[in-house]
Image (cartoon, rainbow, N blue to C red; front, side):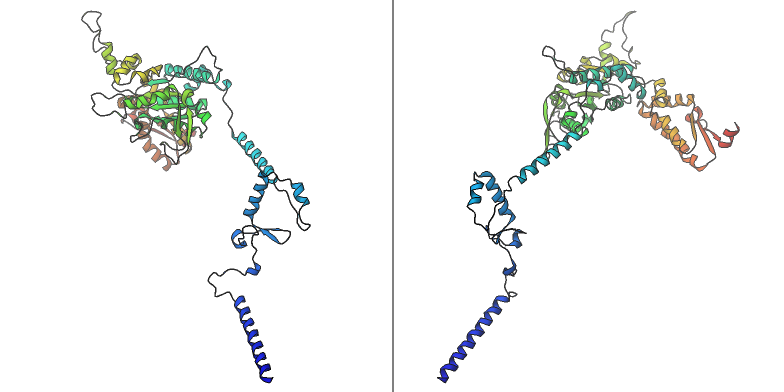
Length: 485
């Protein structure tokens, strides 16, 4: 009996030791490879079974259940699509469970956002242009006169053309009469003010303007800008507003550089092909253009722009066109008292005023292109008197700019009339039009702008004819002399 009792005591001690070791094994998790959190303090979704460490904070439902946010969202969507009678469902629920209808929360939130977004969109929308916003031709020309000297015929043609164009857009179209738009082709020697006229016109009318150079345009598929890039630039100038861009102006400069090349055996990708590509834009068509870029690619969004109401103005110097005009005019040369001599038009400065469509065709412009440019006019060559007026009369004249610069140094700048004429004569010799005026003035004002800040006693500087002709210097008057005088 004693041996059996001792054996039972030993077995009972061994069983307690084994239970103690099992408890230690359960509590010690530091040696496990997964290294999970203590399962006693972790919640699990009652639907998908994922832990709170993976799903984030859970919803706690009466009855000790936990549901993750993903399962709760799917449950709400299922209830919205189903035809469950919630009243019958509530009657059959256990006493310790409840039900909350949350299906209407998203609807109210969505309506609030939609109303707020629509209000912001209406606030940013620009006011539409009306007939009252368009000035009559005589007022447009009067404003152009403040900035552009001379070129009365060109300013009159552009004022009437722009006024009729916007009347066509803003007026109601009738079934019996359809008004077609009138694009313009502007000819003139370099420095006569072609680009400046268009810039001033667009600024006065407050319409988007896109300016491009025809020399960079090539046929689609070749290196260079595509034809549609001119419309893309206009869209960018209108802040990507398609409606505003469709009422804008596109100015294509150096249009004479895309003339049809003669005696060439290669494909004319930057000449006749560009003229062919411009036909659909000039006539009016719906084209897809990239937003914020000049070339189409898969990463750039596209917008459809209708060019039917876009006014195209093309300009170019057309060098050597005078020879074509002279050849046409002197074909009737003969012998006699009333004969037309071959050299009669050699000294004619206004030879471009006599240009015809046939002359432009001989120059290399295709007939289809010229047919879409019904308004063709030429600018006058600048004379000495016109250059003197350009120096001193416009609002932003070169002389006024330098007077303002020296006024900041408390010095008065004066130009003699003879000095202005001397500058104009030098500009005519360079044969670059009004562009030569600034370069000449910059050249003679360099030393004056350098020396004047050295001496605070100088009160007035007068530019003389002798200084311009390098036979003398400017007249300088001190402040004391001005006070005593």
